[in-house]
Image 1 (cartoon, rainbow, N blue to C red):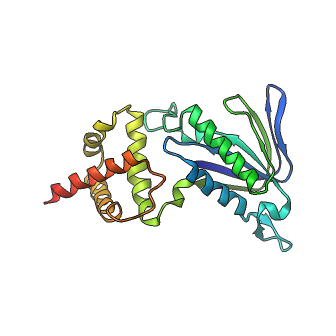
Image 2 (tube, one colour; image 1 turned 90 degrees about the vertical axis):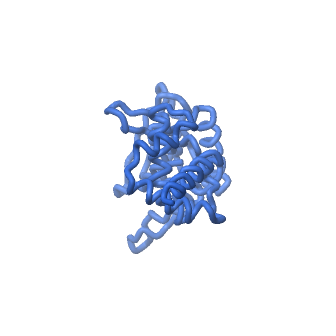
Image 3 (cartoon, helix red, strand yellow; image 1 turned 30 degrees about the horizontal axis):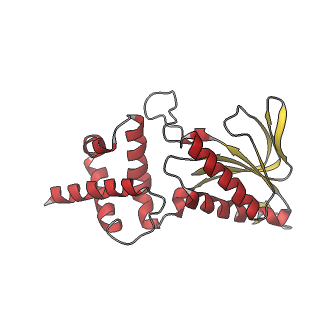
Length: 231
């Protein structure tokens, strides 16, 4: 799950001339939901956003959270945060969650923001929206729920898993084709690096809750094949 967080003096969303959400001082959050996202990722982003210390204290330092300044959140769904330009210049959004799942997690995110004691205004899901904002700073922060993973897993998740899934989805591969695809489209150095990380991380107890079980099995299988090939 990805979020673009902007510190704003004011922001609002309109749909066909109707204002659906408006705030003064606070945070405008563009939220994108990916194929493999779940509530754990949303909880991570909520915790980070609620605690994000990017408001000025009396000395002008970025030291205060949104609750400290009485600010509000404007949450806007933004599937284009999962755009891929792997093939050509026309973006593909195959990495984004299906609308039903995205709506579910977006609404869950909004509910958790409110449960944290923050006022949260919204856009309107699956509608063409006009977003107006005055970025104060400017200050813009990029957040990704992938950062909640055990640090040992981040390299493989970022360099191998994320690229693996993105490319496989872009090429509309079936899961049973992924192994062959990886062997044909990743360099020896990439595969060796992935093999080492798979063997060292995925054979231990680690926090991999954000990765779907089938994907973990796929990476384990790939690691085992590469490891066997070394012998």
